[in-house]
Image (cartoon, rainbow, N blue to C red; front, side):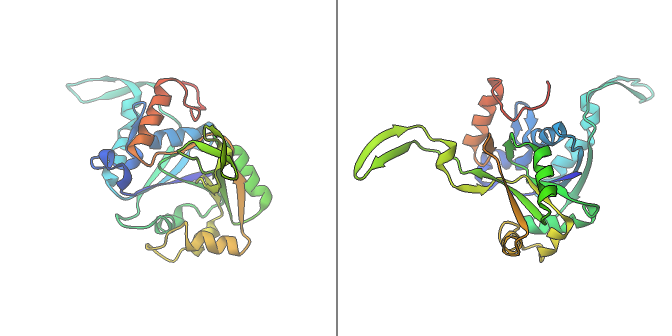
Length: 257
């Protein structure tokens, strides 16, 4: 099973960070959010990744090109240039990095990596979302349903307090709840290769015509996740995730230290 990650957008709503680095490389706890997403998949045994690049693609390429060196102990002979790697702290990841274009839309990026995902169903997500979704259960659910696509649905988190009312009277003011929002696309898809046939070209937005057409054909399943989910859309979101990590209260950290 492969996991495709969309990591090519401009990240304009978090421009305070993305002006110098692509949004998926914005750090939480000293590691790019992209790394956190990959660790979630790896926790469930998914270690083969296809990453769709675009904006500042070279930053992501350079990060993974040097990843092994940065994660390992080594002995270097500075005279000969020989290097011996010692303890290896790197994950067992196989990463395919594909430049899918600077201005390509989400659907177009998926269409461009079609040759790399033709051997069976694959996972797909965005490069800015963290969750406690059970990837193993999601994959099993997709296979049981037997449809072209499965989307994980989450309840839209409210940013504000909630007013419980009775007519013109406020009965209670309470904190927001996960049950207060409508179900929305939370990313974390499982797709059959033929799902990409619904994408016309680079200008196609995956969340519009392709998803709408698959749903209209009765070929989209929904997997409801009621646990933690957070999209790093703004600097405020990034800071909240950073606070969670520093306080050792990061629900998405499913892996051992």
